[in-house]
Image (cartoon, rainbow, N blue to C red):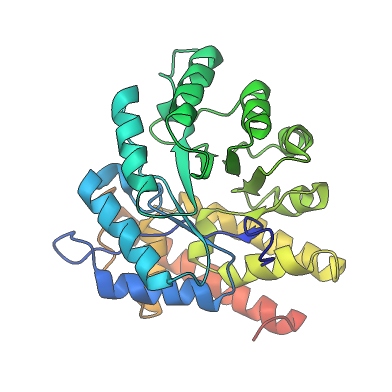
Length: 311
């Protein structure tokens, strides 16, 4: 990570470990953070969809974020969202409390800015009002979260964020390389960074000037994403092989995520349970998804040995 440009690189979307009673498991969270940092990530995205933020109370969201910040203790920057409210005044209050935790940037959720039936003019109006409510010292970002519905940012909104000078971070979930290229053109020369959440377009987006990766597969093999982001120019042939594997492996997101990720964290000793507030674990085990995930991770380890990358 470049200390002068902290929003580049790999930003895991953090899981929230729960105990058998579905209360936050703080010791397991420490292990998870240590595991992310050992992989060489550039920063952490706390309190996001992978954290099950829509299933946390506001008090839990703040407690979770403060815990991450305290334990990380400045080793990497931390951004967080927790932007789940519907009413604009409530959103401003909610985001304001998150800003007070001291995170490096507060991440807005694009689908909170307008109802699904409303147009981009409502999004821009909400965005401008929220932005104006915060002092310039507060960094801001936007995440195109797919739940409860997916709202992609228009070119007008991306341009406004870049030109405002207030925005540092977009977690891009468009999954379209041409859209990513267009967005990179719109933000060029600004402080706004684009982190791709899509493994299939990641290498092409890095080649186009994308600033990094922030997606769910950081909960399985963040070290491979770190390697790709740092070495795609130096070792282009190996980068293609790694990209092909990561592209295929990222389909695992559809195998009952976040249960599949929590089961992997359980298997390596970081978590004590696969408990989730977002979904039940039964289908993951009954549908033989667990075996598929284990084979996917085994293949990744084989690939690292064959290519002579990492340890």
